[in-house]
Length: 266
Image 1 (tube, rainbow, N blue to C red):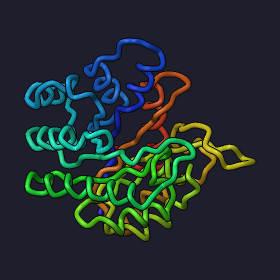
Image 2 (image 1 turned 90 degrees about the horizontal axis):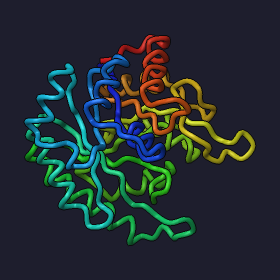
Image 3 (image 1 turned 90 degrees about the vertical axis):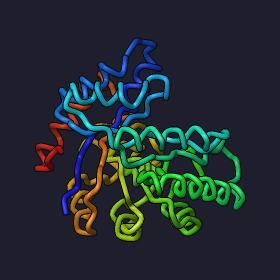
Image 4 (image 1 turned 45 degrees about the horizontal axis):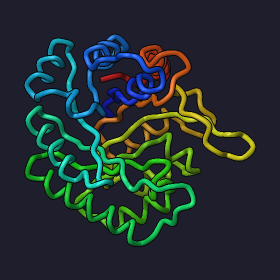
């Protein structure tokens, strides 16, 4: 079994928002391709994706393949996420990656919140199953599912929904990525490969960084090996949220880090 490596587009959207500049989807895809990646996950707004046929044509011109879109549950967005599942079915994508369970600082992580999140995930997963689109929950800082214990809790409440492991968010929350892979290998359908820097004194999150440059114990080679040893042959999408240069430059650095480690890019 071999893990397959692609790239996620969020970094361009974060850069576009923080710098107030125009970064059309066509340029984002071109820069991902130029970095050496052939497979993508998009977090684009629905209106920017266009139609499945138009996006597929754009991807084919660049030699790219779409495998996943991001989805939501909070704020009454289940219906919107079902539309994303339908979009994936039409274009041939396989996974809806769901970030949900957002919580304000100091807000209590109640049983009702976990149950509502689990119910929403199960509804989406049941909708996606006959359409051959998996629904995978993404652990995320700022939600009710940050730590390994909270991941355990959510997965115990779901059956049809899968798990998208995000290595950077998990390490930033103090989790041991390799332990979580071993414990939940049967639920991991997808992943985000990400590195992170934390405060050396307190362990508090500072920023997401290029692969192999963090200090929170994200061992890229060991993560890939651990997943492969568990029989995982799905997609790990490199995700670079923040950059001190440009998203294109960070993508190039991430590609170089993978090649240096001997990890092939699909």
